[in-house]
Image (cartoon, rainbow, N blue to C red; front, side, top):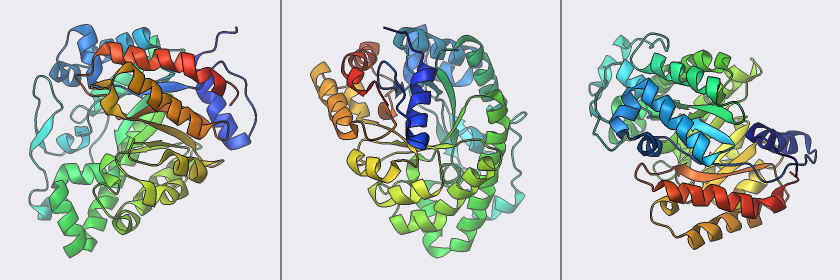
Length: 350
């Protein structure tokens, strides 16, 4: 059997979606969304992984070499931008960083904030370095950046409860903040895409697990579309990941014009297939809890379920619904990629 690279498998999914051409590959493209869980592969703490670019690269390369995913996402944390503008962060040894002080605890300070420079401010330059160094080593699979979307940055600066309260009581302020955060997202994307890595935004808290569909349409959709349109003018495709339950806004997400959509386990895969068909590559949505507490049989059932729903109707990338937990045992990620090789063959012609 001809050996295919991750790049070829992913390319086949995109060609199927946007040209409806049947591209022959050996199996469905697949990857788990991995970041902090890879620290254990190199004997590092999550704190070290997030703060030391060399350890970050070493861990991601170790994950690539062990698991051979078709896409390796450079999944760090989503507080780099708020940190660069004044948030104070705490970095526990073995969990993700958290904000201990928000730059916009006083909402009136928005006018004094300056757009951060991704090449100079905070850890943002380190992230670009991580992309460059990883791409030197990982050549057969797609290396993809994951940047914070504008709603995520706004929550990072202001706090979730405060921002939602602002949306109800002071919508003009939220639009002003979202316009500012959109410019941050675009500026970081402008620094990343020339590095020839995939450009994807994570707006995890923009789902209906946290906000209503009407709030998404009023305060998030226009800014997602602004980002996509900006890069479309430069002939650069943009991906979007939204955690949680997104059924009511799937059509809206597709209408932003994104080239690929990553959905979480609570979102109905069958509905997503119908909405994205011919319009965006669909990515997802194996429950991430299986990577920590699931059995091999449960993971097999989840993968089989996804492949059965998708069938041959859509360009598709099988993936975890969200980031694999930091304490996930590596052997469970081995299960996932091993099962893909067993079960994904029927999807070989995309």
